[in-house]
Image (tube, rainbow, N blue to C red; front, side):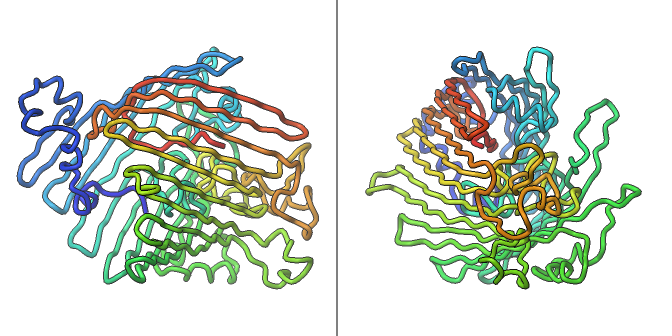
Length: 488
């Protein structure tokens, strides 16, 4: 489960050695202060026997053009502060203030959702630019090798793929508390989160308080042997009560995996999801992985009409990673397929759909889709070339219908799109979506992942009611410390 703690990474990877591999350390010590800070060190840092503290400025200054539309840009300013105190306490905090002008398809998304993808509430100016701020942070306590406790405002990602069907890092940050227990071949994570319910809209004022909803997660990772990992997932989402409280039942915060799934059968008002995953190291350079997510599964209707009942709600992922392709060092390839049946992640009660701040918590396309992703990357010293292709087909809605893609609607509305039976993946208005992206970057400072970048992207969406074709070129410099997804 991401994010990883810096201290945990350092126990697996010699981070400082990896950074110094870019430089001759003795020569670096002789450089002047400005060059060291620019290319190798944190802006400010304390490294003593028991204390490590660092601070940096964060930024993303890029500019480009959407052909036949106009200028696009991002202007991000921020700062981060983090460190370790002894070998038990860690902390991290960061905040960025952003001003952006997006390509038209993202402008449409921002206007409709009132949120910048994966980032924050959007404040839209008359000229079309968008202002938004993003906070992150956590404190972590590791009393021994078996336990870690983490309290923070951030994101989490579960899985081995580019996408996650369980929990992705594509939505806005949220408060969370996480306990990770490690013993034998098992890593067991309990995660409790507070989300924003956007079912009634996100009207922003100076006194805005948004309604809440809550979730508990259990994720058990079992390392069967050195090649095979099996993992088990459960999530439960419930609303705040009428007084604004959390309406917590003990069963909701129970840390035993799959126990809460019984609540669904006992009439619990919560939204329950379960999943299975695996990864398999096939030879030295190949890794296979996958996920199966089950939202609802109506066994009584499974045999009727070929399993097309609208409550047969599941999604799956299959993927392959190929490292050092054809024995070429640092040449990487990844292929991934994701498929989701209609109405997955929805619930009869809008307030507990599997969403946060008007965005999906798992796949950005929602549900009712097929998606193929191909990724290639090559690193040579400080240069990196990346390419990515997404091709998806999905069934869209029109004129008040609900064919199952829009996870912000209640699944009880399915009769407005289809009958209870006869539901198949891709039903509705057949839509094709392609995203192509290529970029070349030069790593300036590994400590902050500061990069110079030049890129090109193209997005094509077509159906009987929609036809868009966007081409964008851009360049800039940024500290690339977070994942943002615009390929939907």
